[in-house]
Length: 582
Ligand SMILES: *Cc1c(COP(=O)(O)O)cnc(C)c1O
Image (tube, rainbow, N blue to C red):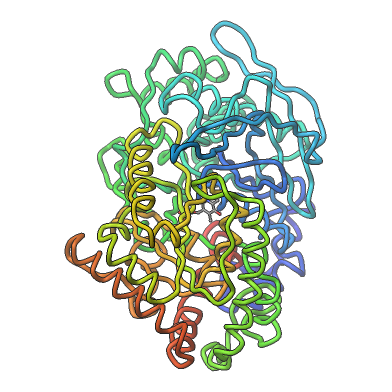
């Protein structure tokens, strides 16, 4: 009651915020607590989190985004709960005879400062599974994890398999029970992709089981649920059978009406989780402007689903060299919340001199070399990149649409660019377990490199790509290469780390890069792949020349930072989500 009384008199700056200062006053003066509070937090559900310092290794960008959301929330003191599995096993890769070998490492939550809270049960048609609920608090945020010894690894089993469904059901229904257990009810639920759909079902079922009319409960759940989509094509999504739902899902639903509602979403005995997800989430977002525009999703009536663009950002303090971060703050390029200056941003950025850039990059290179001391290349040896050498990098999951092989289309040309510019090229990646095509492409690529004396000396493949490598390469590389087939990258965040660390970006115009126009970075333009390859080599030469020429270097770094600082700021992302939600 008290809540409602005060709420009436309170002005909600978030609803009208134009000015970023105001947004922060909203948080600091605790106006935001009208909507969010420690016991009514922002609840972010995700099957994947990438935060190894807290014990959880992810697979790629989806997990990095989840980890960065929590970090930004902690920095800005937003009450925030990250609901995610703690996987008892994680996969790693090493090289043997130029072949990727997968191996598995057991993980214990106790080793990472998690506390056991209690157990919760989820049901299957044949019994119950006990899940441990463990938590770790960090400022206003916390990890709330469910786990059990047979939970397996991230993305273990085929998509659409029983085990995946079990993991998703455990995360949704188990995670919702965990939330109750720690005394929280969700202020808002964000579903990071459809694997988290069952969290919304758990909420709907709870409301109906407590006596709320079914349609009212649907409306209520819809209003407080945000579905964030990362996938472009609905057809690519896994499907589940009705009988899988009978075994794993329905036993966890109390309300007959909710079961019926969900049963109606099957076509020919099959379901894609996005179909009920777009129904239960009134708020839907895509992860870049381009992605929100082109994501092709239909609801159950065949109508096109609209997505609001909230471009991913990164937690700048986690991904930027501390000296560069201080530089941005000292020069008032970023404010204390890590948003770019509202006034005279481009003038401030123009003060960054080539000398400063070179000095900071030098520090970054030293940091990279520290990390490289305990990593190995495709031959199993540690490498070092000389301080005076130029470094290109390509650091990404090895998936076909990202085209890691593109720069090797003309090996002689690449070798000539590297030798002429005293440049090295680091490829960091990992092939998904079971991806036979990419497994072979990687091996062929490594054989090609091995067969050419220049490439063999100057191209290094670093397996087991992880956050440590992602971070270190952003710090130490001069130019990074990003070559997704245009239209297939939802956002991407690696390139954001490169821009934050004053590297040159060579990229196709796709994902979040396309939030700004193509003249702000070294763009790879082309009507077909042959033209793209030619443009890629040309831009590598432009980048190499820029690092020799102060004027060009300043020109491109200033351009990139002026255009993209706002896009890449995780604070900007959080602001956009809060504005969208409330
Ligand atoms: C930043 C990062 C990503 C994100 O990759 P994108 O291809 O840009 O989406 C993935 N994996 C790791 C380890 C990272 O550090």
